[in-house]
Image 1 (tube, rainbow, N blue to C red):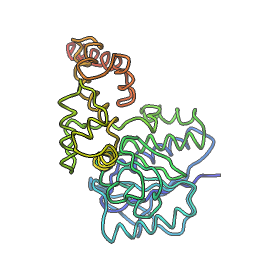
Image 2: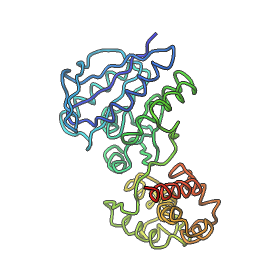
Image 3: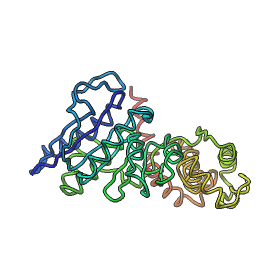
Image 4: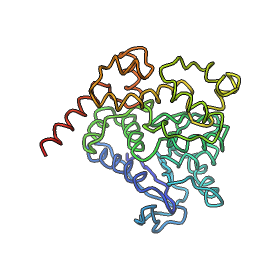
Length: 321
């Protein structure tokens, strides 16, 4: 029996948010004895123009029963009457769907529908603080590639929709099929949901002056002991108030932010190759090279050794050209 996967698009949607997951499920059908039936929908049906200008032919969203229903994202979160219409339709369709999901800013529509209330969700790291501020009834994890909570799946931006789809395919058809799909798509199998999104906190500018001051302090004192108690003092808040304010502004805990900033500061030195890993660890606040390696795995999914080897191979190829 075919599993029916529906995709919901609307004017200005991100094409990769649709095409990436769609190709993953299509390849799963080609590589297994099971089958996915794929339908791209919109509220009215017909041609819907994406953010890049390419139109996509859709079917009108009706009372169709989907096994999996995926809401794609847009370059900026949708607002207003159109968003309310979509949210109502999403809520209705989800009642008969085994899984409801979103890619990137599609999470804002799931949140508006009420489906994310009381759940953990993710979206693109840049919009995580805004999602949390608009919808305090959910808990936003702005670090994760994708999150599943009670049959509701949410993913970060663009390519993370493929990671989420591979996880769904693994759930349906097993690891070997998901691995084969990843190979066909020439993507990693598979960045786990808990792997951090790659983003630059070095340039991040939150809306809160207190959190902005704290981030500046972290950047300038990476070698110091940056406990949550010390950072709360910098922000002139209690530890509890600080933890909440920091998560609301950045979409992550203070400890995760410190780790990421240290990794971002250490990475250019790792790839440069002129210092030992122990030296770099000391300069950027890690206890030792082993702890630094663990942090690199969590943040970028690769060890310092792997990054250094890749940098050296790239430099060797440039010399040959």
